[in-house]
Image (tube, rainbow, N blue to C red; front, side, top):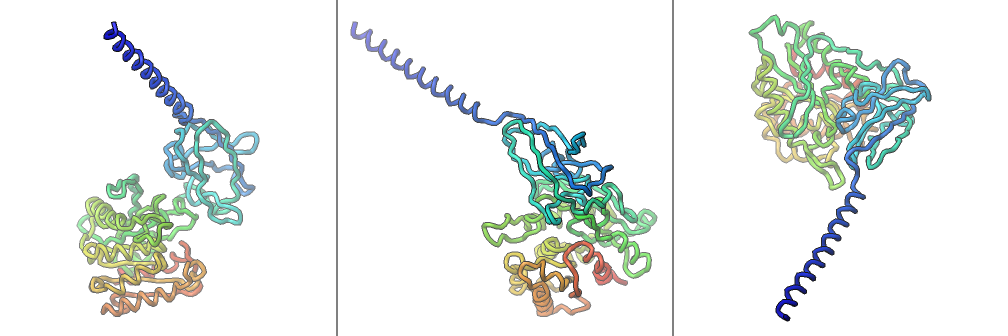
Length: 411
């Protein structure tokens, strides 16, 4: 009898522990279900706008999720209702953080803060159905720009969604072709690759409503016989612009530098596509990389890192202050690679207030001294320019872009 009791007790006790464990697990699962965000959350946006908002223009929410356009300026359309506010209702994935801003259909009409200052992206953590109400203080263009009004001159061809395997993202490439490109099928052309491509040709695409006018400048200089025909490739930036245009991380608080990967993207992924698609002169002696501000910094670093690809570089107001002047220090230590490379580098004296270290012109002079110590001849191998009373933005850069083109491609 005792032999039968013990197995029965073991089975009973095991069963009790099993039930307790089951209750515990199911209780935990119930708690998880109770605390986990729902799969989809309904968000009702209600946006108030300033008086200078044009009545005839549409408003959009542009953000980092598909429902808000994945940072396309024309993301989720807002509808003006009787209360005078702009409304939209959207289903968002629960628990997925969202960043966004309001535009009037292009980045040259994005919202700004009080007194026109740039604001951080608005944020939302959608964990429950709610109404999100906020007010746009002002617009970057004070309500003057007309989204969709193209200012392109000449033949500019757009390649949307160009994918980078190295960077694991997509961007637009805008390609300016010189006059007579289609009429001269046997002719090949040098190529100028430029960062922040959305600001080069079309005011409808620019962030602040002001373009470089690179297409108009090139058309004029080519037609006047002042420069040789050239293809200009505008590589659009992405929301990761700062990271992609930064070669070195100065401190743990700085954005993670992805400039090394961006350089490879420009030198190989973008260039291979352009060389395959258009009639280029692919050799390094006919390939130039250029940019402004951080775009100028990454152009300089890429010219060094991929000196077998780029034979020239134009840096307009480059951010030489980045990482405590690391580029200047690096180039001072190692400058043998510079021989055979041409440089255009300029700064505006009025940029000193915007230059974090206040050393815009001294940094330009230091870089010029490094180029000379490498054996390069001013006026032939490189040219520097310090411009009086210029600020750091597209309109100022547009004024001196012709000088850079004449130095690089002049007859």
